[in-house]
Length: 234
Image (cartoon, rainbow, N blue to C red; front, side):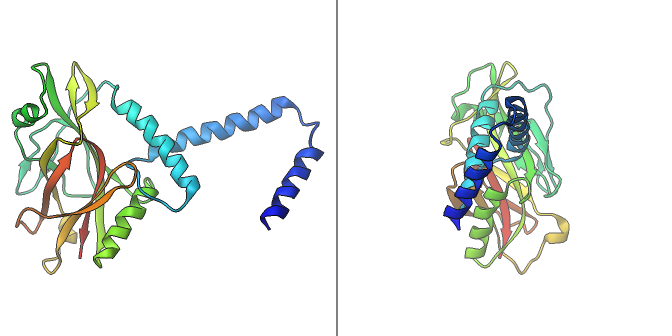
């Protein structure tokens, strides 16, 4: 079937050799525009058996990585986790599917461990992701959850970096910072154990145990740069 399909495709091209170059260029332009519209929606990468998806995601990661290392940030917001408090680090937070994201360590301590200068400050980007937005990341997330007989509660991308004169750059992955994510009220189950699945661009995945005893939250360490973090229950 593969060989037959190839021959048929060749025949079509040969029969249409009088097609104008102008029309061909229009088709290529539309295809490229569509791919560029899809790419920004793909976030932290993950291993995938679909080679076409993996290729698209890798391209998107390169594009986003470039953005993350050079874009200027005009606004600063924060996030609060009920019963825990407000994040100690300002940033761009858009977390609605979970109960908030709160960095727990003082910003000054983070600046010190990351070797920041006086004109630099920690900055966090945190936002919801879904299987539709980040399908390859969720392949790894769902696989990890299934390995312990669990289900996915929700997921976010967290990008830990710094601002220097309004310019954002990612911190190295050797910088580790304690962070808490709230579990949505309707999804708290005292009979379940909660943990975090972390997925790095490139597909490296790990399950991180909850560090606190609060049944409504999960506490763990985020690392410098971009990663997907999903709460699972099992």
